[in-house]
Picture (cartoon, rainbow, N blue to C red):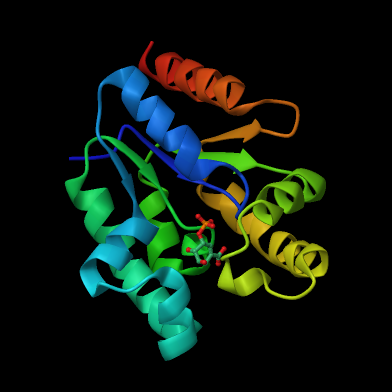
Length: 170
Ligand code: S3P
């Protein structure tokens, strides 16, 4: 079993929104590893960071990624930091991964609308720059396709991902 598509990208890329819409369009189920971790632990991602630290969250996330890739046959969104794990990247290379590439301005504007991201407290702009510089090569490493989201709304990103899935299947 394998997800039809796996979405990766920085916080603010729109992974969850886009994954939900793609699932609806294809009549598939949607899954998100952040939600899987929250369900498993009964704790919010934010509280896991505060109470147990980032490393603990990353271990839970790595397990959630492996489980979802093995069990889920719908649409999967990963937390923005899932690609930090070598083990997860090795698994992801075997799947149809789409990188929702998002420039600084758009990502900062989008996370500004939803402030409960533990890694982006304080100066969101400088945190986001550090995060993007470090992670862009990791997203690119696992991605079969990349969609530049800056000039697209969510519907446009959904259409582009659906087009790429169709193209792969043709
Ligand atoms: C994180 C992104 C979050 C969540 C956690 C850590 C990150 O997911 O997994 O707060 O390291 O980029 P989103 O990308 O869905 O915001």
